[in-house]
Amino acid sequence: MARLASSRQGKGDPVTNETEFEHEFKNYLAIILGYADLLLEEMPADDPRAEDLSEIHKAATAAVVLLNNHWGPNRERA
Image 1 (cartoon, rainbow, N blue to C red):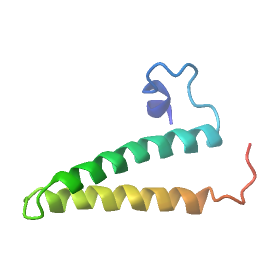
Image 2 (tube, one colour; image 1 turned 90 degrees about the horizontal axis):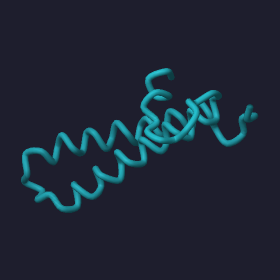
Image 3 (cartoon, rainbow, N blue to C red; image 1 turned 45 degrees about the vertical axis):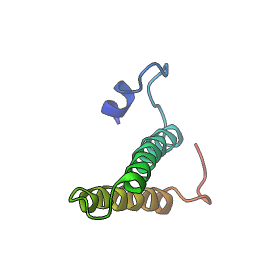
Image 4 (cartoon, rainbow, N blue to C red; image 1 turned 30 degrees about the horizontal axis):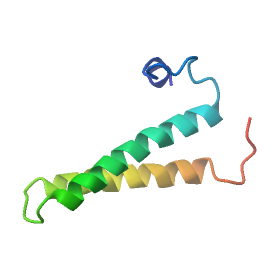
């Protein structure tokens, strides 16, 4: 968590609790997923990089699911 806190460019104080960490981490995943979506839409299907980009997208999607399973909507927030 220290690395994430130190990389928060211009966002003030470092991440101090699980709710902030979850929020920040999901923001980073949303950026990864968004760029992967854009690139996949623009990339020809026969581009050799498409398979690798698809794997990046699948991994980021799995990370979102993992976060949602760990910190689901029914958990108590700090």
